[in-house]
Length: 335
Image 1: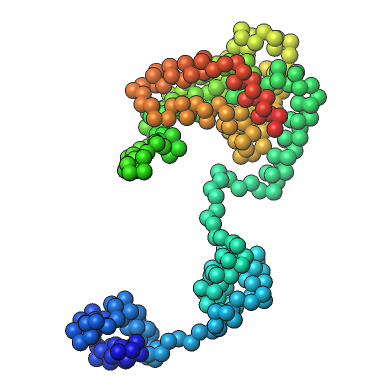
Image 2 (image 1 turned 120 degrees about the horizontal axis):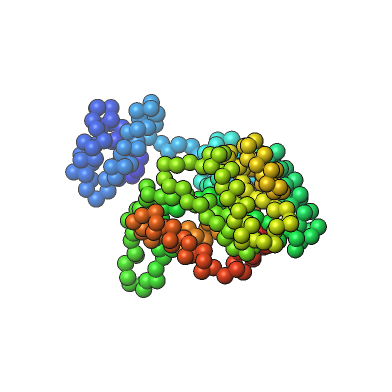
């Protein structure tokens, strides 16, 4: 029996108030070798419910070969350039051609793919982008004026949480497997609740000092000013070459860093503050070097106390060669 004849029988059963399942059962009994599938029956029942009682195929807007023309290719390209998120069905409705032909033109003729947007921490405004340019130019001018003096005086800091347990990344958990071996599995894990915040002050010679703040505590303006006062004491002991030089100090735009009291304290200490553009971790040596390497080292390890985390962190930094800090700052600030 032909498809059209089966459709007439389906329509007959639909008008008799039968369900798609009953219709499928009846057709299987009468035509066991050629009855349509249940999905086909449900599709036609859904069409009949909308009031479209014709058993003929819907008329196609154009033949496939007629749809793929230079004119349609140009039109589709223009539509996409005007709206990168436009859907295939919307283009098809606009040009009165099938969705399949639209997809064929986009993939095969325009060589385009629809990709999900890449997640970034924040999209910068025009003003913020301009601020990045201005601040970077200011730092470069200072650097080119006297490169040796710049790195001799440069000092930076930032804070980060150190967890008792940091899960391995997907790349770190990768293993070599033979083709006939099962794919390795790992359970979903999260960072531990136990943690300590490390405030790291360092320069091209290495770590000056690290302050550790326990969980449930916060770094406010007063606490940060106390750290800056401690920094001056550490500089006097560990960086005697800066005794008669003005420190070039760099930190990010955290609230406690940018408060009026902090600015007054930096001025009182005689520090020259380097600008840091808003939302720019890629310009901070702590983020693109020091902390990222530290977190990779800690990933997968489990500690029972803050003291264990602190001891591991201290040992890690002490084992680093002086060139690690020097190259990290010089390469990063020169880019």
